Length: 388
Image 1 (tube, rainbow, N blue to C red):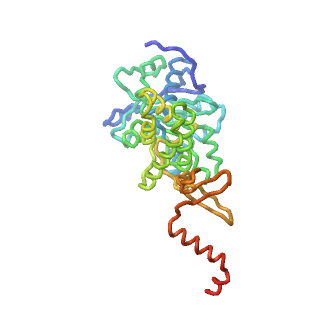
Image 2 (cartoon, one colour):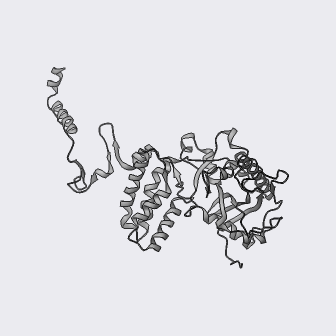
Image 3 (cartoon, rainbow, N blue to C red):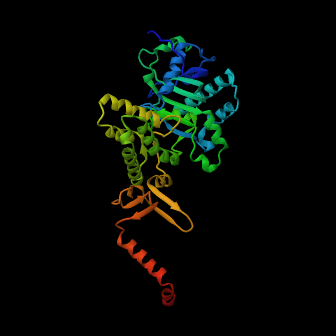
């Protein structure tokens, strides 16, 4: 197999590969649970760069959407890795020995976690400290063994060409800058922040859970931000695409209705559902165009910049702000569903921009009764006082 040379997308600071030695449904050979390298891989090697670039490209792609989260807060449950990473993150110019030590400690924790899962299997674990688009990351990736995979006992990089990126089963990534921002944030701000992400083709299955548990990952936070951003990011994406811009508002409204339905039924929001909705709104496109745009949308939403997780709990306050027009002063307030608002006289709530006025049409009887009573009280204040 011939390797095509190309410039690596990422600036690799450190990279190493270890091996966790375990077969599914079998216990470890505890005399040798892993195969560890003592030196880094050559980060200038084309095979190594291709491997790192391939793993990076997995994030946010169709079928590999990421969960976003933080380390488990409970110190008794998070294990040693969060504290070890914290110490590692404080050293701006990390040396090879620091990186190798951290990677070996993660391997030891994986061994410990996998012992509790009989169905868990091992594989090659690639650790990379790299910079991409101005952000520094630590990426840990599990690549499963398959027939034909031949890496030498010494885990030499020239053998890595036999690894198939399609066999990547789990990966976790930590954003150093976001991690630092989280450490400095107050408790309220922390609820809307995340700094790590992970993908797993077997998410939710106990056989793969050891990988996430070993790193001390926790998912399901930052739901307020995800709820708020999802409809607006969808509209922004559609408006930028010439083939989709006419559907921007319609699809955004459908996404809001989807969020409302999921919230009312006490269900989470899922990007897989958004993918299906998006496909429906692109039914007029050719199949190739639709597939390409849906994939592009999913990658955008789940990207490191936008950070919509593959699944999240819908935040009520954020949802209310999305679907309602809210205005309040000491003397005036209103709060109504955006779907009722229009710029034609037949709208339930008609906005006249020229006269800067709102008109409420077809008010219910109860509302009319209250308004009429208020008008009578205003016109005859003395009579109302006499009645009292």
